Length: 570
Image (cartoon, rainbow, N blue to C red; front, side, top):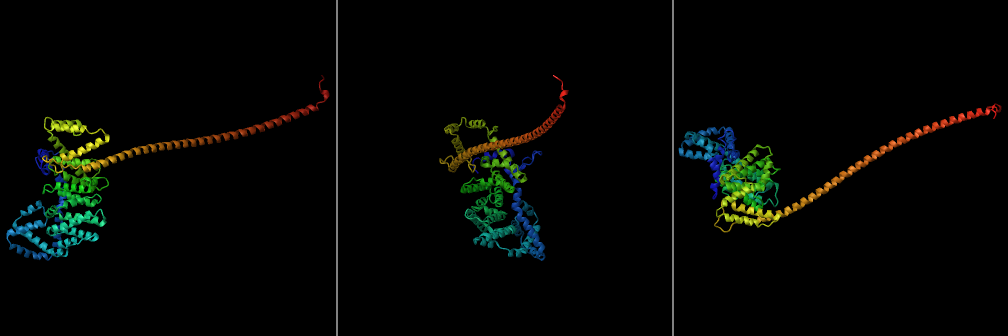
């Protein structure tokens, strides 16, 4: 990478004095109280171990099985050893190196073996040749690499293709590197051609077999790349990485996990150094064809509803794309693009999940982000500024251009900004367009400065303008929808209040009816009681009248019986 490399890496080297991996691995060692800093090297160690050591384990198992199942083989060892005794030490060393390659041992495990005595090396080569010979009958019964290549070229479909791919994956995993070398570039191209055909046919009439076959090809590629030869052959293809990127599909989470893990492992390969740029370029190319944001599929994989394993894999690839970059501008640009695309909101949700692997990835992302922020402040001559404060940012910019050739141009930019028409909606669109143009000019995708000698500068704004137009329509529609929703809420609230009031009135009316009914019953009882009292009084009055009449009659009867002569004279 060119322009800006020195400034971009100066902060890391200034503080650590080492490369990004070694320096970060040493981070925190000076202070025993602090936890060891997460690094890309630590982050990907387990993945690379799985990526490079799977075949070794299986080869050991095969070797043990061969020794257990073939008792006669031990009788042939002396003859193999006798044959080796007849060749020179130089030839033994050549065979020894071939053995190490075929066993797919990494450099760290090869070194102790190379230090062994020549006699031990002869014995090891003898055992290896014997084991290979003892396993010939087993290998002869299985398909050869050329048979698989012929089958892949025969335009198999659906179940037949899936069965062939599953069998091929097993062979790639179980056979030594020499078998993979026989499969070679021709076999790899067959796999990539089929994968490309399946990708191109996905929009026409995708079937379950197509999806499963694509996933099986990704697994075959993982097995094929499980050695230096496979990785080198894959990197020499024109569309290999792009086809892997096209398999990053959130609609097929299991396939996306394998594809993303492969891309992450490629990004951190020590050689070639620009692998993260090649993967990023493939993501960009795929996004341009599909007319989506280049990090869109990764962010979709991080959003809610997806598995935690997919979230971990996506964060791993994001870290693998950013951390290996030497230039500070490039790292800040990629991280800013991710944040603008929605990662900032997604991170808030991811932090709520209880998963240790995911927490490690998030910690790596945040720690390196803080580190880059410190480097950026150091570049600005250690001036402490608040990047979100308009006044401080403007003052820093003014100080950087003051009394320089850039000052009149800076003033001209500000004057042009004043000419933006005073419209609430249009102003935001203007500033967004200007921000995108500045982003493309200042922060190139390759992290280098633009060619100032060339008068023509390619700035892709057509897509952005179309998006702005569509976004304006969407915003108007959303505003109208919000207004209608508010009216609906108001109407619903009024209706609810009326319903509550009506229910209250009904309740009051029913209560009043109950009260009136109770009062009526009470009055009826009183009326009945008064009627009874009246009847009782009438009966008593009648009785009294009878008594009076009786007495009157009795008195009159006595009065008539008195003789006249007894009456006093007048």
